[in-house]
Image 1 (cartoon, one colour):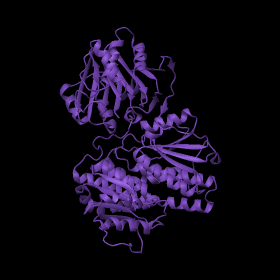
Image 2 (cartoon, rainbow, N blue to C red):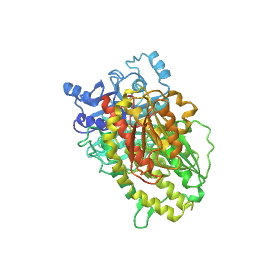
Image 3 (cartoon, rainbow, N blue to C red):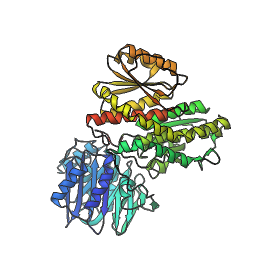
Image 4 (spheres, helix red, strand yellow):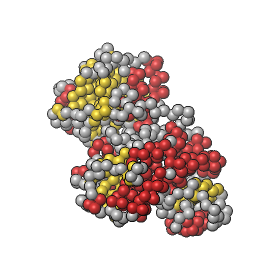
Length: 606
């Protein structure tokens, strides 16, 4: 999970690389580095830590050059350190890499026997020495072909060469890589977001391809060295200047943007005149689909769990949910009448892409729900449903999670109507409810003061539980994940009715427990489960919806009420206070909220 940028130009590239690396820091931030070609030699500056530290070091050295590569790292092989930071350079070659070389240990032994001396603990340095070795007897193109044959695993590579004064080589297997086009300069990037400040014209490498980039020319090749033609795509330019504004953190901004992003998404999909959902060009008849498989990782997996409840409730389809990293390694019995739906914020999640690739190889019906329409998952799916949330920079997903749930819900009720699983009147009621969702989420944001006053109990406890039934259970999982990601507090999401089957043993005096209990058909049962944990000394935070009826329980520590809405849409409203709880808990502990330790935004390795 690392960020790569490369630029070849007729002017100095250092400042442009730094600006691009800032945009890529969501991909990795434990170390960073730059290498440029200047006066016939490769010069590099690397450091442990963020791009700010790298820039300070660059100001001391005044690194120049018209060709350069840069990198932000999320460590896989070797601890975060200056030695392990990318680029990894020899006298003749410098390499940046995203991915994992699975046979690096074997290759290293071969290279050491040939006299190569390694300085780092990384798998990437093997690539540097391999290219150096091949260049002794081969030209550049054939050296790249040979090294791609040698490497096992996943990678996106950016490479510069001492004897090639304006060349950058890019290569891809598994990890994404984009190429950008500019006037008298061209670019390489691990995603288009890093390139948008410089160009809106890009091409994408497919698996096994490589490219040779010069400032006035770009050639693409397949793994055997045969030239391939690439489409040049034009990116939307309205997201170039996304910044924090007056907010202290991107996450705070992204939580508060949710009413707007919900409204934007609804405007994209709902035809208000005809009271219908616009999902154009859906390539299959709903009657040809008898089951649906929802696949994702982390927060996206939780949105899939949420959608499972909706599809089961509103359609007659068989529904299953899979964690992407498990799906691709099980013995799957593919069914021609199944729709496989892949959910990913970045559209580059390696495990999810691997599951998609497996389905495509078996000629399945594949649909993706993504935030980045230029991403690998979007490009390789047979149908794409964008969530229209705009860029999400905070590592812990907030508005993208809400967007994923919304698009999955829209797909659900559209299929339900097409299959006549729900009546036209019920469909119309659900559309009407959706139109009010943005305003209801805006009201949920007003729970902020209540949340701030109770955070200390969560950050001082050694653990906490999040409980829910039915539609509330996936949100309990997501609430626990957010607290873990941001405040580094152990938290567990659990079905409320399962507490008595083991986890009740964890409850002790003063332990904070969040209970999600909308006033639905599960309400009285959930309140009974809540009383069980109160009786064992837990401090219960009850989150429910407003009602004239009293809560059927005593000794509740705190209660937060969100607005009333349909049972289907309650999960959207209750998500917001849980996001705020995680945010303010981390803030009180003084943690880096947008860049939590050990995590990266776009998980492009297995």
